[in-house]
Image 1 (tube, rainbow, N blue to C red):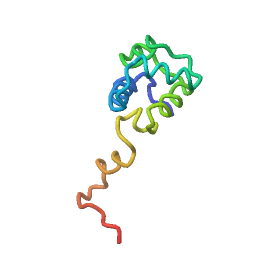
Image 2: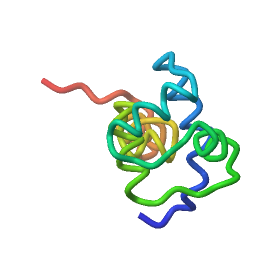
Image 3: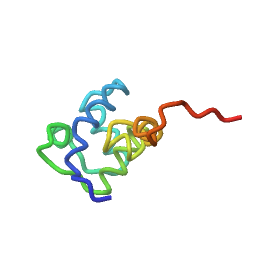
Image 4: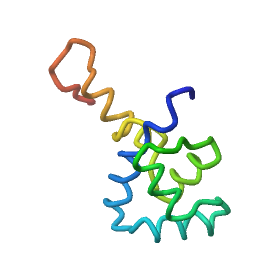
Amino acid sequence: MKTKANDIGPNVAKLRNRRKLTQDQLAAKLQIGGAEITRQVVANIEARRTSVNDQQITKLAKVLKCSFDELFHGSSSAELHRFQGNGNSRPHHHH
């Protein structure tokens, strides 16, 4: 998983807002989960001033109830595949 870890900032902000959490609330939830993340760190992550490690990414995904795909790309892999498609724009019908 070698994407630039600090690229997740805007998505963290987006997912946090979707969960109606402030930076303080997100930091508190992360701390309960055992991550050493203060509100300042959350702010830095969102502003891309600091990169996150694997442990922080795992905790963020858990607290924000999202997948790694959503953290890194702002959408789930299902959505990504739908957009990329395979040159075939017709929707697939499952019988």
